[in-house]
Amino acid sequence: MHLASLAGLLPLIHGKFEALDEVSIEVLTEFFSHYREMVLFNTAHKTRELLNTYYHAHQRQGEGGAGAFGGLPPDVPMQEYALGWALQQPGIAHVVLGMTNEAQVEQALSALEQSRR
Image (spheres, one colour):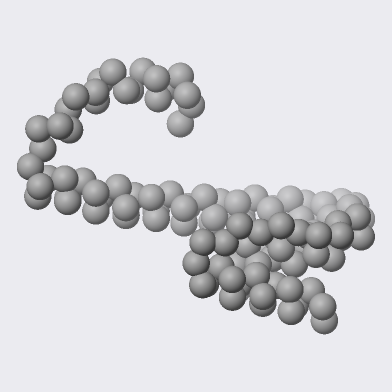
């Protein structure tokens, strides 16, 4: 959503949620939680699709630049692939990660392990 759209939306919803009861608040919170997950999933799916389309287009044209990317395997999480790719680049000496849960730490360690093979 563009900031201009958001700026236009805020006056419409300002003051609308203060009078909600607890049940309505829980329903809305649950809805937005699921909505967030759907947006994250759709964004990841679309990003994977676009990256692979880019890769295959360059492969068909015989351009070598796409070879460094190599396509995004369907069974590899994008975060793990991106970290592995970054670790393999000759101009990158260090990668700084921000992790907030144990699963992210495990993914980072897996990518590090894969990049050292």
